[in-house]
Image (cartoon, rainbow over all chains, first blue to last red; front, top):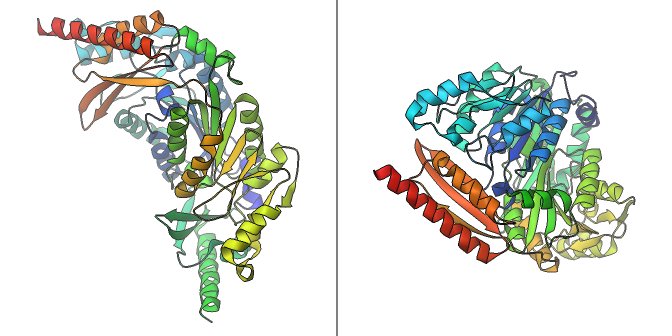
Length: 263
Length: 263
């Protein structure tokens, strides 16, 4: 990351002062921390937000502890333009996100008439029970996030969106949310495959090229799989002219390294 | 999570006062936050630590910004018994983890003779370059973590382990680290499949059963995939007698719900 970009990351965490719109993602659930369930939600959300012009600054996975969830919602809501939580909005005792939302916004839960109506229509009045009703207890003032998969809505309070943890439901909710979000500058990226070049040989060029362009982010991603090495250089910028120039310079640098290696 | 467990989580974050040994995981890298690369490391580490009797309390994904990495290492090192970082220890300019380690431990980088020797033996003295040498610049006082895949060692400072971000290298390093770690109480878990029962119907039983046993954690994990619903109840405890009893009670409760449904 160039010094300019690093500075902009640190100074402009919020409010798009530099044209960036930022987000934080909170994944809530003991099952992720135990390794039993592998989180795929945060990567999916990050990719979708990036494509919409929203820059994800941080992701956290935290346990089902109300005080912790509350504290992290407060922290992220203050530091980022948007916050997305997944998990903890179901009918059982380990679903604590609604309560944490209420506390984080200094309010309390109430039986939300709209959410209650949605659940009654979905399940039938005679098949409602305490658990299903629990999903209609929302923080006062909450907006609802439509759930086209299993009816029970998500929670929207100011700049924070509380989504389900079940991936198919989360995806349906995110699909409803994203068109309503303010888009920032779109960060474009290109990947330059350099599998035949040792990362360390092109390292000085990458640093030089990154520093030559304000707002250019050059990442170097080696991989080793089954003993085979590879390297991808990823360049990112909101400015495609800069990407064109940086890509050409990196390809030139790689070519020079190849020519030297052949001698 | 039972009130007892929740309390123990909050009070005994460190030092295994209650027999738990705790850990935090820091995933470092812009490529994860952009969604381009999907993090699989944290889930792998969480599962391996859980199996060793170490409880992962929190996971964070943060960008390649030295100040942020430093701050989060300080925070996690103070709050958890062990901290694991992945990413940012390679030869390029975007690899900032060693510098962040040095700052977090109030020291500076030095050319580590042992690490330098490892790299010279691996690459050959005539094929060393600035990038490869960079990987031998370690915080003063660092221990090395063996890298059987690509030689460049990881960084060990007090209770913090800096591993590579490339999954195969991270796995090799973690395999070396884990046998050296103090194990806490092993948390056993069992999964009870309840695909034919609506989550909301068994919710009151789950809460009652969790509250009946100190240190029992009952999680309810619904899934919806391609329109098909399913439910797993996961019970976790360090005490297998408690698991036996809780499992029997949950199976009884599920059976009663099935019998009522058939009427």
